[in-house]
Length: 308
Image 1 (cartoon, rainbow, N blue to C red):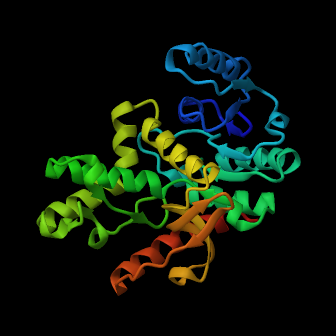
Image 2 (cartoon, rainbow, N blue to C red; image 1 turned 120 degrees about the vertical axis):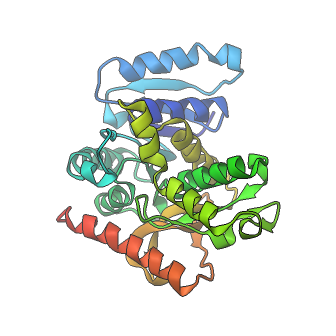
């Protein structure tokens, strides 16, 4: 393969992301982690599956951040995961130090890369990355909206007893308790979900979507989600590397769109070879826009805690 993706962090999200990128033959993958032997061992294990899974992409593991050199795209999953009772915001200080050091390595060794941030609190870590890297803002983004939208779509499909493939829905805003699932735009094969489910059911599914991450954390007790998050990252990676011009919700740099100024927040974005190529402004009601503004304000509060 002639494309290179580096995944920082060889934990559950990072290793699952690396595996899926390789299996889909999107690029060769380097996994980098500070724990000696772990990224190398996981990479070797994945490579030994290549004959059975039928892929020729190369996966290597490293403890040297400089091995991201020449990457076309970098995914940052490094950081500690949530535990029961923790919010994403509780991770801020610890993960800010980790993500900051990763950004230093990327800036030095992969200055032309597009960067996708996955570490929590996601929108704040994306802001930190945008600040530390100094790249054009369209080349830095956060993965959250794809995951939150996938959860919303999943819950709708299960409630209605229909195929996952026929449900279309989008979640905007920060990756937190005040995210904004857009019920009004959710459809099943073009039919509005508001015509298929009563308001109380839809309200319950909105709440479940907002609590989607902690629901899994509470069930696992010793970790957080990684299957759906890694799939969400790969959806974005494919859109960028294949220049698909996919419209996906991503934490993108807003310059007035949705009345959000100079902030990374979840909005519909066209993803292609140049990263975030366009932000699409949906027609929102005053209530929806107010919810999005509230979510963006919460992100801003936490950004201020970084003291950048």
